[in-house]
Amino acid sequence: MSAILYLPGLLVILFKRHGLFATIRHMLVLACTQTLLARSFLIANAKSYLRNAFDLSRVFLYKWTVNWRFVDERTFLSPAWAKGLLLGHVTVLVTFGLFRWCRGDGGVARVLQRGLRRPGRPAGLAPVDPDYVVTVLTTSNLIGIIFARSLHYQFYSWYSQQLPLLTQRTRFPFIMQMALIGAIEYAWNVYPSTPLSSGLLLAANLVMLLGIWFGYAEGKMFSKRSNLSQVSPKQLSQK
Figure: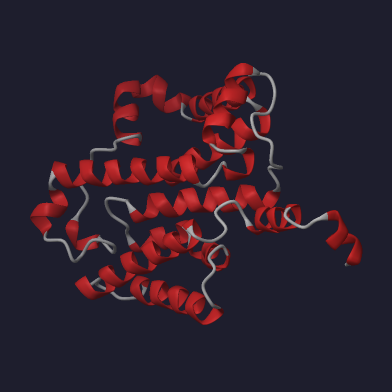
């Protein structure tokens, strides 16, 4: 299920890089691969497998939560809380998709227009380079982590190796970047979690996400290309 957090960013990348038809083809490959891997479970009991393997409504144990300890147990277990987190997750993803991940292509409206008008060709104009890919994927994952209904201690592996890169996609000074990583590391090493450690974890993740929003949401290479495009040929020749 953790891999699903990357899916929104992956869809943006595929659509920009390959176009509508190729994006649909890639999604079909993913679906077929998942079906192939699950074939023995589907044959044995398809209904039970689908209900349990992709159960988005399951209730987590409050005692194991790392990220929402400052919320009382009744609220934590309520369906309204789960729906609110899902709404927040979708809203933030859509906001990044509308205002951050397609700026280099003239905005999301132009990307969609090109993709629907020419479904067999790439919908983006800006290069989809490795820097863009890793930035969008890890940001998509971070958004999912922030709005996860419950994070257990082993879930730190979902993004611990990505933290140095994520902080580098902000414009924060180096000391603040290290402070964010240190705060997140501290929060994940408090057992059992406390309202303070949970609040610190959420605050650090949110600050990092805000830093990416105002920083390099499309990667640092995009920022460098934008700066070069604003330099006149005369200035370049002088350099």
